[in-house]
Length: 265
Ligand SMILES: O=C(O)CCC(=O)C(=O)O
Image (cartoon, rainbow, N blue to C red; front, side, top):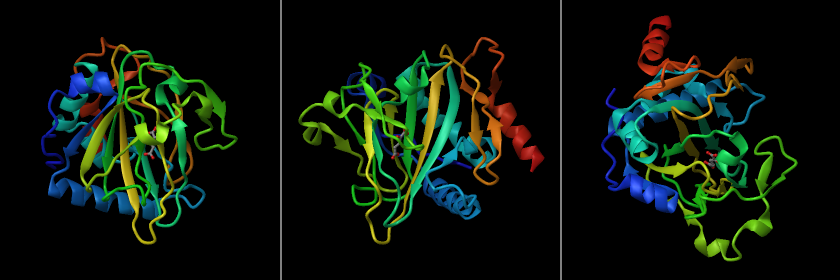
């Protein structure tokens, strides 16, 4: 599958370092977008009734199409500009919000919760046209170099948020909302503060893929996720998508893993 077209963003590394995020423009080919939407809808149909459509954690370990997309050279090129040449696919999170529903996600920084070391970047990829009404994501540019104080939210989903008094007083003016057409993407630093509103649209879905990459010198911790179909827990696998992980015992070659997953089907 030719998933992608080359992002039209230039100087990704420089802008990523300065702003904490870069808009990549359209990254999915027409064929790639149609296939990703079809696969996502199938997965929504198969979602266990006890889970919400924003709870697809690391489903690339069950879904070869998603692992294949995460390895797409155009996407990995963008990640390499941001975090360097040795890249591990660390996790994925598919965050869908139904029309008129979907949970808000409070201001938070990913990296402070995860204790990662290394350098970390997420590709945030839209499968629908997105704007404020259907629950797009907002980032706070240039606040990615500091860890902000946190407080518990009292919720299971995103159980911590940035202490509101630590946000700038004019956060409403400084925040940037992603307004994308389906197939568009951005890349962000794990520490950029970000949030998203609920989906208030009467009829439009919000389907988003978040693909998370860590430089191979980062902290490769063991972790478990819930299987979106069965709710059984499974162990995280760490896939080298480019470069060298120095034979790290927890890191596997992504191409080998992909071929094995395909052969099992
Ligand atoms: O897509 C969103 O609504 C928020 C994504 C997010 O919080 C994350 O990827 O950590």
